[in-house]
Amino acid sequence: MIAGDARPVAPPTDAVLTDEGLTATGAANPAGRVLVIGCGALAREILALIRANGMAHVDLTCLPAILHNRPERIAPALEAAILGQGAGYDSIFVAYADCGSGGEIAKVCARHGAEMIEGPHCYSFFEGNARFAETGEVTSFYLTDFLTRQFDAFVIKPLGLDRHPQLRDLYFGNYEKLVYLAQTDDPALDARAEAAANRLGLAYERRFTGFGDLAAAMAGLPGR
Image (cartoon, rainbow, N blue to C red; front, side, top):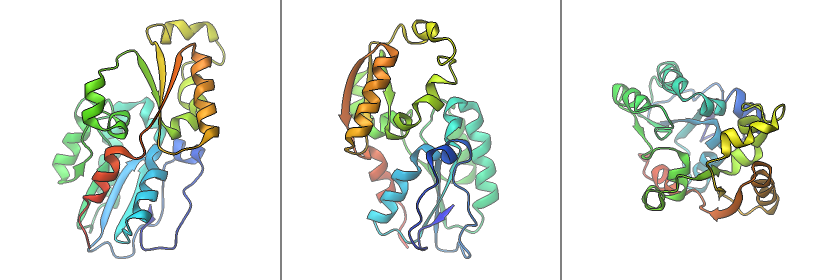
């Protein structure tokens, strides 16, 4: 957890956010404060929004980003985080959309009176849920800034493509393009995303989204 009223703290490395998430001691006195529990893949964006909006009353903790690959494990981990770290906070905001949980994340939020981001997944709320729904792209494979940096850890190695590249068509044969939803303007990341598309044999498209609906959701958190 990173406390918004502490001195600015750099997030852990992407590898730590992937396997461990954000852990910390928490606020000494959570009364009057808001706890955000999010995915480790969103840690940098959430911290940037906390700083940009002067949200000194907001604390952040993140679950391991690798749960992205095992969505059935997100809701139990989220509930454990709420029970273990949420006591005493005025409100809890969950920085997850449904994320493949089949509605289980929403059920956990309802049980504990927590708000959450609307939408099916982070690709949708980064692009904007309304716009994403309009495009209806079922043959596109999406990357964000974080997933571009962690492409091998989230895509290549879990699917065994580093050992068995011939499986590429089995996994990606029905896709037509890789869409990089960019939160930042970073030519190096753009090059890495295009290289990922080439590796998967897909056409490439970059769309700058910024923080999308995540920014509005964070701006709507209760004030101190």
